[in-house]
Length: 139
Image 1 (tube, rainbow, N blue to C red):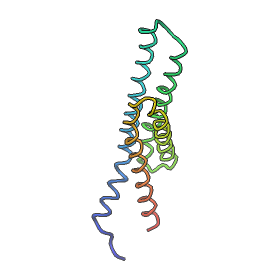
Image 2 (cartoon, rainbow, N blue to C red):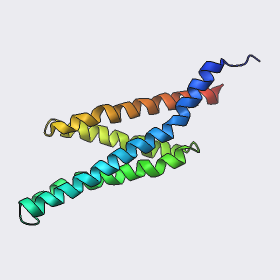
Image 3 (cartoon, rainbow, N blue to C red):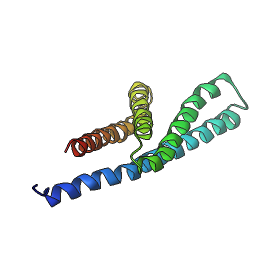
Image 4 (spheres, rainbow, N blue to C red):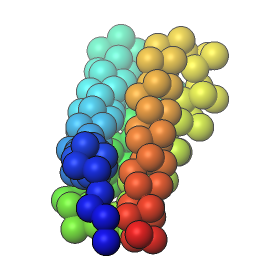
């Protein structure tokens, strides 16, 4: 039996080992930015408009949804360390939701364009990790 190339094993294991940390970072980025968005939306409604109005609920649904999905990614990062397929699907699903929603909202709010490479890059990394894990399982 031929031993595998040491460089490829190190690169594959590094990729797989770094995925939970990347998930944690993306989840924290999303959760913190969503919390700040919600706080600023509430502040805008009460300070500049003098109280609650129907526009506040329209602004808050983005923040609360993003916060919940960001927390799912943060919690899922711990489960990813033990190679949980459920956590992998939840985290990549959350990133896919972010990517689609960001692509839809970006034309109306250009600040959302900054999220496209983050979520797209995360999903590409997830695809690479999944391919390496399958390749290792088949070997």
